[in-house]
Length: 138
Image 1 (cartoon, rainbow, N blue to C red):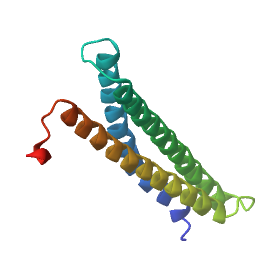
Image 2 (image 1 turned 60 degrees about the horizontal axis):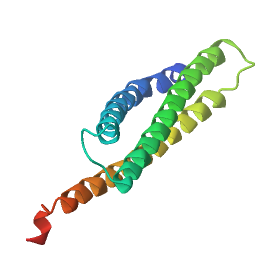
Image 3 (image 1 turned 180 degrees about the vertical axis):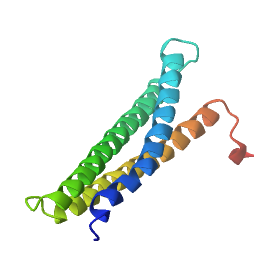
Image 4 (image 1 turned 180 degrees about the horizontal axis):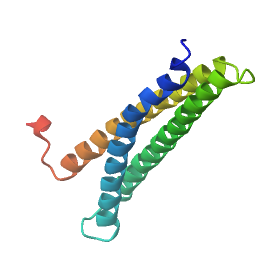
């Protein structure tokens, strides 16, 4: 690693993580609205539907927590990288290690979001089957 990459590299990843946070937050808010519609009677919903929506909510929450942790780790990696440039007390491997852990948190978030997407499709298919409109049965 070059000296400047000790603090620049982690910060270059931040915009991508921020975009994931933005899109995941928007999807989480839409889920919140959907749960409100089901719970407050604007749309009927079975216990199975509500359970599926709550499972999706937990996946979103866990993904967002992981993404926020990645932001904190990347910012800390950038800070320690800067400190490593000016102080011999900070090891140069620390920023790289923090960046690696942050990337692992992003991968974990992506896996959670994949799981949520699959669950979401299952809920949509269930809606269609419950209303007898399943095009796959024709």
